[in-house]
Length: 482
Image (cartoon, rainbow, N blue to C red; front, side):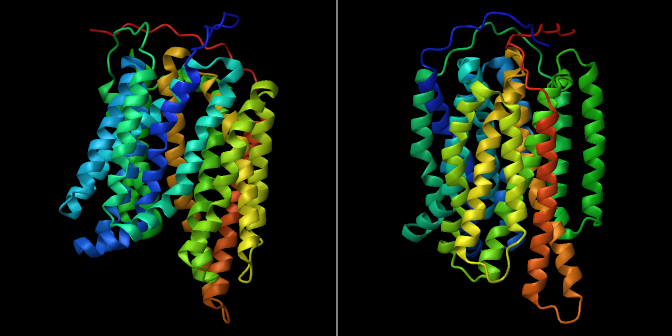
């Protein structure tokens, strides 16, 4: 795939400023993925819309975001990371303005989807841009620093949404994107490097469509499985669409001359293993983020403000640890740090498994802090391992794969944890003498035990994979036929 021993290109002298530009836009994605949720009851009341209809406000965003990021990765390799990144910022900012002015719920849902179109573009390009301008000896530190924006965005989203609802209205959660988007556009436009050595390539439209069908079906099945039941006709249809779409996608990509996703990337065991470990990590993260608020507010009767404060324990620690772990991986390698980090995540879930109905806020906060420690220690080295095993002319695709894994993992995390929780809760509820709290805690412990097992699978994969990465070089493009 890549040629070892070649001299690495000189690092971009503006690389740290470029990183800041990427982060200035990148923070909008995770914030916007969570900030809206707290405003859903208000939006439902304002537009007199049912819960099912309002649910499409976040669903449209997550569905489009998760289904198209892979396509954006390929577009970045074809037309340059800079162009795709800036286009995404413009689309996201304009869609935010229209969403803020939406006269009805359907316009809001439509332009939430357009927001996701833009967010997917700059989120898919972020890792690729950072990898392309930093030398190998600084890559882990740079990717770790870039990972901080996700932690900050996830931490800020709920609290920012609550603040804006208090001082203004639900429309403010979209208006606030506009000055950030304008600043990010002009900042990035002034520093992002122009593409070099771009060769004319053919876009794989059929592969993009098949990939969208497959990913959209998986995300919808994961979202609706817990709501309608895994045996419902809708989930069966979506599952069949997922397998048929995946089969068609893989079959087509193997024989097309210039595929949307170069499947030969997965022949690299480090790339494949690190992506699997990332999937397990994101499933685990989503399980923690999804279930803890219900536990805090339903069982312990904490206020939303108190809940938000406790939930910041995890991203706050990740924010501090991620760049340190990335810098350390530049010297020690990625495998051991990724294994240790994912092992800490496993331990954190086992500790969360021991919570009970009389636990205090401090009991939960220090467990979440350990969880954040593991996530921060794992992600930077693991991201570096993934991006370090991608040829330079496939960096967009590699970044797109990583972003897709993140979004799919977060949806599957909610699906798996909610399903295990509901099954165990229902089982205990049927027993004589079991009250609602007992059943809830049984479901919570079962979900966290399953999450610990999945996290352990990611840790094992990190342990057995190699720590060797080839030099970042390009692979020859196959000429388009016709």
